[in-house]
Image (tube, rainbow, N blue to C red; front, side):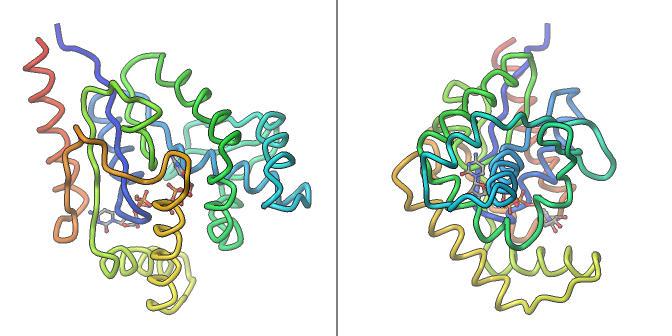
Length: 227
Ligand code: CDP
Ligand code: CDP
């Protein structure tokens, strides 16, 4: 019988993790979980509550009180905090520029990691984030560390923005991406880091289909090994 696997995809901002993870999950009939959306949802809730984002205790209380829910949607999964839809709100620049501060709070991470592990316990899963292979799913059978040059990642974000009618200068986008990566890789708790057993996948010169294909091959090879 084909073994149902846990697939952990980590890497820096805009490497293509969520786009590719979603397609891989669909291909294998696995659940997809965007853990970055969870940190973003708590950031939205904290901003709405007008809490100082550096106040770890207050933000942790918000993380404990906020029920995050995903429902299927096209082209993106819909995200709710309680009954409020925040699918668009979580992508606003104010959230993007503050989410790393919220994600650095140890107790916030503890709350969200519990939730992520309960989602993964349900069966085949593709989960993307920063600490999935190292902390959330340390026994995942497939671990990918997805990277691309900072310039290429900024270009991808730039093109995505243009398609939405937003024109942010490329150098500004690249600086924001690099700052967020720095914050995410230098924080004390579960920093962005390649797990020792993760496969490094440089997607700088690959399009989305090529990345999906590369990961699918890794999954199929692992399924064969475990058969
Ligand atoms: O899609 P993008 O690369 O912009 O980021 P994201 O995956 O939506 O994650 C937003 C932020 O949440 C990251 O910059 C991290 O600060 C945080 N995050 C985290 O700390 N751990 C995770 N497992 C996922 C996201
Ligand atoms: O989740 P993460 O922040 O790592 O990246 P993403 O939001 O999935 O991808 C960022 C942008 O890069 C999206 O607009 C993707 O369509 C695009 N992309 C690409 O052009 N080539 C790839 N190989 C992967 C993603």
